[in-house]
Image (cartoon, chains in turn blue, orange):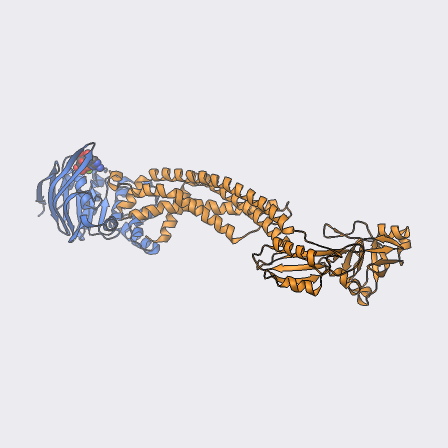
Length: 229
Length: 393
Ligand SMILES: Nc1ncnc2c1ncn2[C@@H]1O[C@H](COP(=O)(O)OP(=O)(O)O)[C@@H](O)[C@H]1O
Ligand SMILES: [Mg+2]
């Protein structure tokens, strides 16, 4: 599904180009559950921003389901963000003055869906993430774990091809992290591809594939052995 | 995204910052309200003037030429020859001899041998307006064409010393003798300015005075004609070669020229106030721009989130542009209503009515929309050009 070959990325810092990613080659199949680990500043976010269509400016070739992503126009890029990927951030990124339901329904609005259909779909995914009665609540009245559930609901509401999560448990305590991880695991078991950046060895071990990054290069890429298999 | 949703979300953003929205709107409201007030009043004045110019709805205008004979001769000033010559003029659609529409005219006559030149009101039906003593013109008088007259107190006294002596005495007008049946007050008038001092039944008067009452020539012109110039030309020509140019004079009082002068002044005032209002709209527009820039920077995170879930640049642009237009348009509509209200209020103290026209509504609608678009586009561009990665870091 995702084929990265020779991906490089530089940021301009003052007068110099600072290269963050060096020649990344990576294939991810539909249905995988991937963790990306690495020290702070190693380029993890940069990489998944490219994978998740948030960043269009990179060198190399990114094929997504046989479409060359770098050839797409900005508008088509926006469409990919809307339809094909669900993005989950460390700090939730919910619109604070809109209700939970409206936040979750936002991608559907941009997909052109009618308001009535949106409400029923949103109610459905809120139930799926374990927040059945929160449609009318404001995000600030929810706990961090619940807010991240809302963000996950928003990510899955358009039934995208894959989810990208940048340190989704980074702002949560370990008990809540475990709940969120269980939710991701559940989604993956039902067939959703999940790509997740994390600092937490504990979290990474629950996935099926662990990619380690150091200084913008892939250091290792191996299957995760689970204790019970 | 559906267009309706753009409007809904723009409306809600404005509502969520009510105080700021209203303060920003005030400038637009004042600007539009003042333009509408002055236009409604100016329009009203213009409409009132057009009425005075006797322009018909199709744009035809008419004028009048009066013939006044020299001395005491009673003669008709317009003959068929004159009319035929005037009708050759392509600009003239109608040339008609008629008596005064108001039923008011001045005549010559005498009471008890003393000459008078009274203003006469020709009554179509029964009349006892301003009656002091005696009785008015009755149904019976009108029906059988009795030569009766009501005269003012001063005419009665001039002829017969006292008003009671005058009753049932005679008065001669344009050669016809009428019996005085009633006395009217000296300030008798029709409308506010047409004072008169003798009333006679119209039928009786016209039966005896066809010539005198027919000394007004009414001309109607094609739309767009320069009526003042044409009428003056016709009057000049009548004076040099008209059928009675030796027996009197043909006069044209150019109402149009006078009204045009007033109209020019009103137009000048209108333009001046519109210019002032435009400056206020411009400043209001800057206020809108400022508010939108603040909104964009406050809502950077929201913009980032919307883009991350699939909003295109164009959708972000429209979101903020619609917000700006909605703000100015609501201001414009409130201003329109306020302006109409003020104009109606003011025109209660003026001799003409403020006019409500669809064009001033469209002007208010259009102007406020344009202000929103012009001053909203830059902030909206700023919003839509934000770099997603930078916002979300
Ligand atoms: N928008 C940007 N402009 C300039 N430099 C950036 C930008 N984003 C990230 N960087 C730099 O690129 C490096 C990698 O950042 P990032 O991918 O966020 O690392 P990680 O997520 O692994 O902590 C860092 O040194 C960071 O300072
Ligand atoms: Mg990071």
